[in-house]
Image 1 (tube, one colour):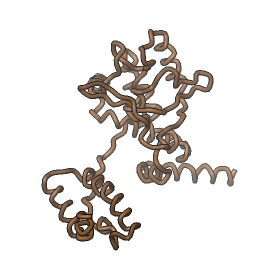
Image 2: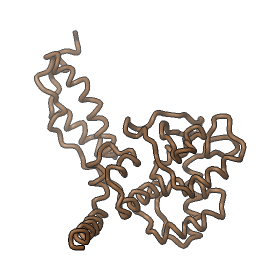
Image 3: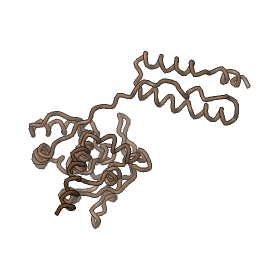
Amino acid sequence: MSWYPAARAITQFDIQSLYTQMFNRGLSPRTIEYTNAVLQSPFRQAVRWKMLAEDPCVGVDLPPLKRREMDALSVEECRRFLTIARESEWYTLFALALTTGMRPSEYLALKWSDIDWQRGTTSVSRTIQTSVSGWTFYDTKRKRSRRVVKLQNFVLEALQDLSSQRETEHGLIFHSGGQPLRQRTIKVEFRRLLSAAGIRSIRLYDLRHTAATLAVAAGVSVKVISDQLGHASISFTLERYSHVLPSIQDEAAAKVERMLMA
């Protein structure tokens, strides 16, 4: 077969050169990492079939991923934000986002059928993506992203008030004229409410970080927080919110000492 010798000729140097060219063309480190993951699949199969002696993707240097710095609202800022949001039609959406830590694509995909009113929970089982051509439901990001999230009482009450409105054809909780909301619209309203509350501008996604930070500060188990956020692992949660943990550990140590010395 004509491609067999060519496959043998591919070296680690070839792969490294490809990634260097991609980086110099302005492609993001995330794109290059994804390309490497895609290429590894056929190369690993070729190694298993003994068509290649080794996977040329192994050992190449990938550009470091630049993780965007996260920001989070303080407790006082959360109170001010919710007070301002309460006077708008967006209160229920932002209250849910702030307290559950769901991703925007997750809470915009919620249906009324996902709410368990008796247990006070909601199921996260899908995401929604909108574009110029329309919108589509997708499965969650990963298996652990499928989860049941506990809702706070004031959020449940807000949802109950909202449920009295007519449902859409697709049963979506949050919609506009029967059509799914777009994140672009949510971001505009979010910035407007932040400004009205006298709070610095942060990303919409930072409401997820705010929910996690508040939970850590409240002493909630990291395992519970990780499950609620749908993280891939507890270690990821620990790494992501390690900046909050030292003060929590100090408080935990003080509580244990008070128990022992009482």
